[in-house]
Image (cartoon, rainbow, N blue to C red; front, side, top):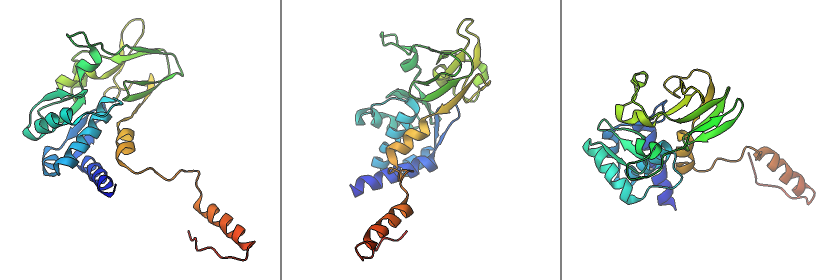
Amino acid sequence: LDVQAGRRAAAYRLIETGAELTAWGGAQLHRAMFSAAEPEVCSLALETLVLAVSGQIDSPTPQQIEPLRAALLEGRALTGAGVALTDSAVMGRDPGSVLGRADGAAGLQPLTLKAGQTATFDGRWRVIAHQTVEIGPWGADFKIAEGVPVPLRPALMAVTHPETGELLALPGVNDSGVADFEQLGAQRIASRLLPPAVPTWFDAEECARNVEARLAKRDLKSNISV
C-alpha cells in the first residue's frame, strides 16, 4: 500500500510539473519530464490524464497506455483510449469518440438545456445554462479556435442556438455568457491520485473537547491535543 501511495504521489507531482491543463479541456505535456520519470509513474500519470481529458469512467488498460507513452516519448501523434495525442505533445479528446466513426461507432448526442438547467457533457464539462442552448461536439475546424491544434478542434464542446444552429460559445475559447462552464479534469486528477481530504464537518477541536468532558466525569485525563 505504501508503494502504491508513493507512486500516486509521484504521478501527481509529474502532472503538476510536467503537464498544463488547457482552458479548452486538453493538456499540454512536457515530453522531457515524462521521459525522465520512472516508467510506472509515467504510465500512471498518463492513465490519469486520459481520464481527465476524455471524461471516460473506465480506466484505460495497460495495452492502451503503453502505445500512448511510446508515442509521447518519441514525438509521434497517436489516437487511442478516447484521446488524441499530437506530435507536439498536446492531448485532447478523440474526435472520433464524440462524432462517431466510419465503422458505425456512435458519437455523442447533443443536449438541450433551458435557462437554469445543469448538465454534465461527456464527463468533461459541467454546464449551467442562462438561456436555452444546445451543447455538443462542434465537429468542424473553425478559425476562432486558433489556439487549439487542428486535429483536436472537432471534439471541442460547442454551445449553439437550438433552432438556428448559430455558434454561441466554445468553452475555454470563446465564452459569451450564455452559460457557466466548469472543466472537470482537475477534479478527476485529484480524486484519482490524492488521498481523501478530512471531511469539512469534522471539527478536531470540538471532538477533543467532547472527549475531555466525558473523561472528566470519570476523573481521567485525555492525551489528545489539537
